[in-house]
Amino acid sequence: MAELATGLLGAAATVGAASLTSVFGFARRHGGSLRGEIQDTRRSTEGFMNNLQSGDVTPIEEQEFLTTRQRAVQLETEYHESIENYKTASWLNPFKKIEQKVAVRKKKRLTRHYNHSLMSLNEIGVSTSCREGH
Figure 1 (cartoon, rainbow, N blue to C red):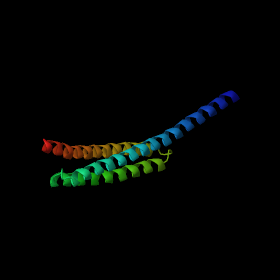
Figure 2 (cartoon, rainbow, N blue to C red; figure 1 turned 90 degrees about the vertical axis):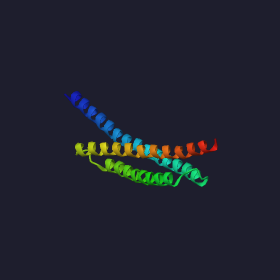
Figure 3 (tube, rainbow, N blue to C red; figure 1 turned 120 degrees about the vertical axis):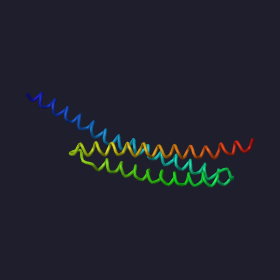
Figure 4 (cartoon, one colour; figure 1 turned 120 degrees about the horizontal axis):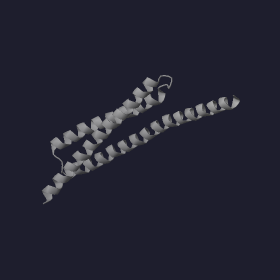
């Protein structure tokens, strides 16, 4: 009987440790993803500013880029907040924890979508300058 209790206690500790590792792993992975998205926004902005200074961007492209960039930065903030909310949600309320996890993933998708849009807008300026050169 003592062996069974020891086995159950060991299994519970293993499951608990795995859950804790999963919690920290999820938040850590998304923290890394957020840092990558922030870097992508910076790179796109730097590239776009170079295109703007060289005159390769129309006023309409500039406005579209700035509007998209503003939304991307806002979403990065919301993504960060969703990660923090996930970390503070109690495992005693598993439905809330799952809801927060879904929110983190949704913010990641939106942030990534806007960063891809920024990259595309940046490439439009580059392709415009290439066409004008020929």
